[in-house]
Structures are given as C-alpha cells and as structure tokens.
Length: 176
Image 1 (cartoon, rainbow, N blue to C red):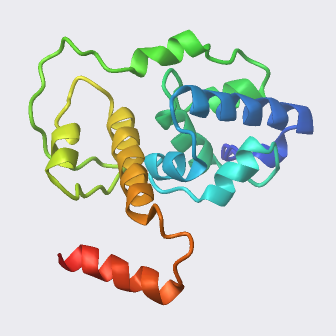
Image 2 (spheres, helix red, strand yellow):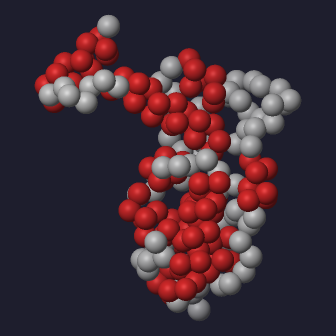
Image 3 (spheres, rainbow, N blue to C red):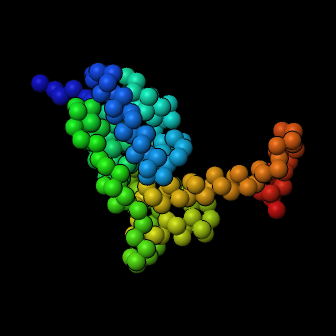
C-alpha cells in the first residue's frame, strides 16, 4: 500500500492554524521579515504557497512543507508534520543556533548548493557567501536584505518622479 503524500488539507483547521502560526513566528524570529525573501531561501517556493501555509489554509503540499522545514533554523523536514499532528513546536532558543559564530575561520566557497540557484552580484555578496561558519539560509537572508536596502536607497527621493523619469534614472545608474 502506497503512503499518501503529506498535505495540509488532510488535517483539521485548528492543526493547520497551529502550523501556520508556528511557521510565521519561526520565520520572523530567524530574521525573514518578508515572505518573498523566505520563499526564495526555501528554494523558490511561491509566496502564495507560503501565504496559504501561514494562513492555515488547505492546499499546501509535501514539497512546500519539506522546503519550509529544511529552511527554518531548528526545524527538519518532519517538523511541519509533527506540528500538524499536535507535537512540539521548536522553541526560539533552538532556532538561535543558526546565528553566526564570529570566532570561526572564514574561507571562500563555491556559490552552488543542490537546492538553490544563487548568483552573487558583486564582491560584497561573494564575501558574504564565503562566511562558512554560518548557514546557507543566514547568508542568503543577509544578501537579500542588503539588496533590498540598496534598492530602497537607489529609489529614495523618486516618489514624485514619473515612470519614464524612473526608467531613465535607473538606466543612467546602470550605465554609469
């Protein structure tokens, strides 16, 4: 007899809500303020799937649950199922183990992993990627936070600009 794949629709609304709340709290505790960044760190799951999961909705499948479990610090692929079945939720202190160890040696590494396609854009991102004493998720989070900050700084003061002026300004920044 084949084992049925894990799906949130097979669990009652209270169990789905419990898991959704646990995922949202763990994501934010790990420093992923934005769902888009976390979805990328999970290997490119859709933001909509993450919204469904955190909202306690049915329709979230095994691949999403496994990706979220692998990505959150202190969790495993089995953690979402454990939570759905009423088991323990990892505590925030268990998740803190994923924070950087500043005393460890830093060395450069290749920028490839089996689950994530990632291409550093500049020397700073290559340097961040080379910090092997922290997890892949932590490095990606810091890189994406930096990208968002740089994007905000680039567009600061452009609130009153027309779309054509914004495009022209962006093209000038890219060429110059």
